[in-house]
Length: 308
Length: 262
Image 1 (cartoon, rainbow over the protein chains, first blue to last red):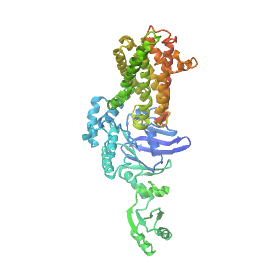
Image 2: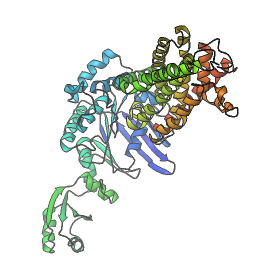
Image 3: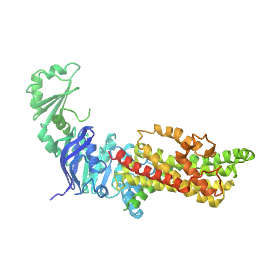
Image 4: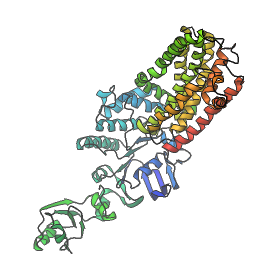
């Protein structure tokens, strides 16, 4: 029987008249990597801030570790590891000092903290930078240090808000590799992201958020199977030819999406659809066949793309 | 952990950070007060003492005691302004801190504890230098430290509260230009309040540094007469400064909570 670390019912966050989070329900089980996928402004960060008890709940109910965030915030926070969207490392201090301070905040003894710092720097691949100042480190190194800092208290739940935003592809993959290792070792992770590949790679289960609401829930595979046909054909046209082609698409695929720069055709059988394109005299400049992704799920559910 | 222990943990992190940044504070904390002491007390003082000599004590002693309180104000105001804006806006360390068991109140208490330690150190150094100048005796100089520290901390808490209402750092230098500098000049630091026009005197009584300066002088210069200090009782100055500290503390905690836990 799996235990829920977080349970939310009708969870709501308002800022004056603006509803950032609109009565959402979700459960996060022990040992899973749970994702909140959605574009910027969907309410993901507001939800994270309520879970980490640094933003009061406007309405609804939530428990974290069975505790009430309004009255037992401190007890909750002592068991959390938080990686905020924006790095707030102390740039003037050294790598090790940044970890040390958080160890002290978590009431650890100096003798406990120092060996822990060694392990965490090893994990974050920053051992050689132990005594360097943080400021000159690369973006990827700073993120890894922020993750190491979140692990100092050996948390029961790790919350990562947009962990790889702003990183180059190589740094992202290195970071994902570290997060896989945490998963493998049984950690419970909450990850928010607006990158569908990140959600697909890391999350066991996720909710898709849009405008403060949850619009779908499931594993990445389930969501794709449920909301998007197996394959997608992406068509790009020469200047001015797209609109003409768009008129001739009736019945050619399960569904089509006409975007600013291309047309997407959703189909269970790409070969047949391509044949039909040819028969109808549609000749795109470029054709790309790929498998459906969470991006397509999001497009189907909201009519918009994840990243504008 | 108790509230005190958590506040101390935050103070500890400020000490670790200060080890990297103390150089930037040396001029305002130590060098400037000493320059003022040399120029005003020793330099200008020789002129003043040769003149009317109404004070009954050396002008150097008068200025040194005034500067002790004024220096406490400047350091205290400094602690309440730029580091607080840094915590919420530039270093952003307050935001990270509140995701741990440390809360906003403990950030404020922790800063106050750290401010207490730093102010005490800065003022002891100043007092020792004033003694070396021959301005005052060591015993009274050390007795004046606690009231001077109280003056500084009263500024710290009130200015922390004010800083927390500001959008960004632009207004902070305005504060120093239009509040701290006039207080520095017109609170009895360099000349007795009684020299001010009669209709301005009551305004001076209402300002905080005046009470700090009076308190320090009444303790360090026991023989001082009406030409140097007013007849306001000691306890009134204490009540004023303690009330200022507590009101500032209460507002700081509330405002910080509202600012970083939206």
